Length: 557
Image (cartoon, rainbow, N blue to C red; front, side, top):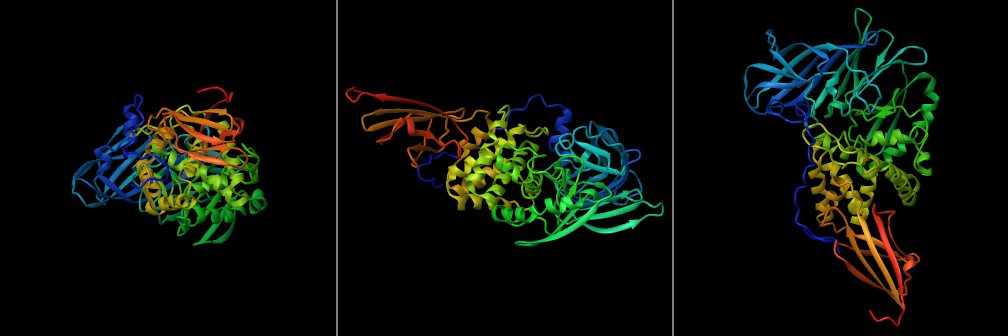
């Protein structure tokens, strides 16, 4: 492939997987596609449950319509061990199927071998008390709360922990249903808001009310949600590249606050439309739903709990971060990064969170310009731990470092300036959305798309920033003798083939773009004081070790 001017060129090779650290059998059952999982492809779910806040129980069924992708007589369906599978029925047959358990995996025995390409319907009836979320949204489970008037207020968060903590499904991010019906039955006087469009509301003979929500787009399992309570509702329409309904559900006492705070949604949609392309789920609409926790990116039903403050619950790492509501912008960005594009493995959760965090800076850029966006990004440096790689461990449900948020956006900002062409960069962001529209993908897919669009091999970049904890160090040696200054430079990094471009500031409003490697190179400058030479650390996430010296013109070197 043709390289960027001045860039190094490498043969593209696959990145090594981050080493696994003593995964357990339970980890493998959760994260690996064993034959009992890979043998079927889910096409449709109908989750039909009754949720009772009085005793914190969930009971009902999930109907799984699937296609056999290989001959199979045993399927793995995931449901946490504290929940009870009451029966499993195939294709309307009256004879129940045998179900065995291993940790949080249920194995359902088919009555005969299912032929490749055959289509089937499996109904799992179940019940139980799903685990309580001790620290939502970071800790998976249900939150059985009360509003200010003492009414039940019930929500669920399960990213990372898994949707199987409360409903039976093929709990692996690589398999999304093409569509889904979510039927939630709640006590009298309460309502449920879930993903997609409300198709029907039915009052049952006992006074309980059933809400049928239909999701007409592929949806990853952890995004399936319930919001049970007494809400005030208002709506709007965004008329960007596609007409989009905006629906808002909040506690009644917060209605006026919400009407003011949620005005930012239209500005945000316009910005994301510019950088990422159209909102991915117009047929399902967009909702913000007030929650008792901080927030979560539930597809078309984003949970909002930022207390109608700016920043993150009223705090930010930079002044500009207090000009907008962090939760609205970050969680909504996941409609593109995480919901439209979903990583096949949670080890690549960085695809969701790094791009989602970077979207915050792009929103700042749209509203207040590039300089403010750079200040916003660099304000995040103080939060980076560099404790573990951003990419996690594949096949065992193990995500990478939490640095995927703040370091992730620093890395993506660096990548933008390595490419050094905003048309190409925006093309990459939109191109990923278009190519993997409503699909799942791997890190390798992202890397290949970036390399192809940039017309250079940036494998060294991804290895350094995503698989290492070391920040690249640029070594500079600037020696002035008379009118001439010789600058020597090199990279000191964990990745020996690292050859990322960098920018030197060489005096008042002047700069030079260089391409260091791990070997020393030199640059001759005229009438430049070494004291005026610095490396650009605002647009490149690097460290600099610079040493300056001044030599007597009579000294022979």
